[in-house]
Length: 362
Image 1 (spheres, one colour):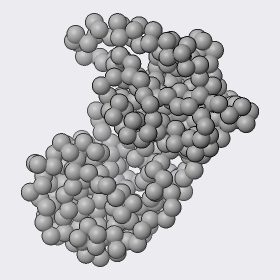
Image 2 (cartoon, rainbow, N blue to C red):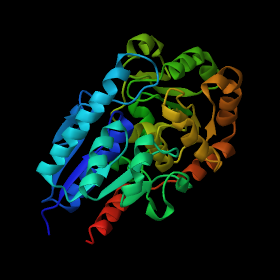
Image 3 (cartoon, rainbow, N blue to C red):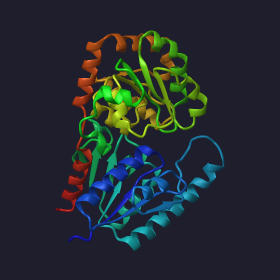
């Protein structure tokens, strides 16, 4: 049988979309004659990102359940019921061989109805703290691919496969030369800090870096500072000799190669990529995410002595001392870099697809 039909669903945030696209591309490479349909949430970023990656997508009228009071609480049940109806029609028309969910509220309706209609489905959970959608849908899942240890706290142990998270292909091979990469950013061949706050940016991290420019200059540390598209106008003025301020970094392998140390948020995909890169990291988790999962992701790395972590509340008191430790202690940097590299799963996407093939007895 070569006419496989795959539905891949996940979205609401990049952390769910990019793994979905990576899995789709690997399946496409192994099954070039297969049909693919992505299912996401209307008006969310997947509606642009997925077609750009070359896949068809249908959007459901669905939104996440938020705790704060407002009109959205009244519309949520209507959206949920209608999205389940939409998902039913999609399944009846498409008749998929297998459904894949990468989490987020966008994947809930299609996986729920797939279970009711008897279509097999696989879940890919990116975080160390399982999302509510995935936990609710795990019971009928044929396989649950995870990226962290001890996930039997959330899922049946016999359904779990420890595969890791999909990462961008251009990081799997060795990174470019460090000195050449620094020159590409207009920097000297000296200690370089890469600051990552996500494509939109992280306000607290940007404020932190801006207030410590003199500190980094005194320590002879150069900066590649990705401040995000929301903040580029505000922080562009900090661009100077030894400080590169960018809204978005197109050539991430070069940025990682140029970096001697990294400050970053700790979303699941980011953590997986940083493990592959194998550089010393100070995680500053975002406190504004469901169930504080970024802190839990970072802690799982810190527990292996593979990174440092500071909460936003600790920055005022501890940032300078932690950074001074990283900057001045080369042995610590080497140790953290080696330890995080040990946790990397470079072939996660292929492992996930192997689990899918096993389910289909291929």
